Length: 110
Image (cartoon, rainbow, N blue to C red):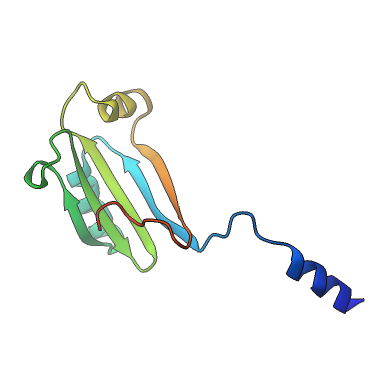
C-alpha cells in the first residue's frame, strides 16, 4: 500500500513550484524614514537604492535585507503619481509580493 501512495505522489506534478518569497514591496509615505526604522529596529541592511540619482524621477526605493527576508520600501516623489494616490487612499502597506521560482527574474534592482 505504501508503494502505491509513493507512486501516486511521484506522478503528481506541482503546478506552481515555488522556492520561496523573493521580496515584499511596501508603498510608504516616507521610504527614507521607514528604511531607517527597519534598519534600527530589526537590524536589516540596506542593499540597494533607486531614486532620482539613479534615473528614477517619480519614486525612490530602498531595498532592505535580513537573511532570506527582503523588503522594498517605495515612496512617491510626485503628488500626482499612482504611488502617492495609493498611499493617500490606503496608507502605508504592502503593494506587491514577489514569489521566487526557477527560471524567473529576481529582484528588479539587481
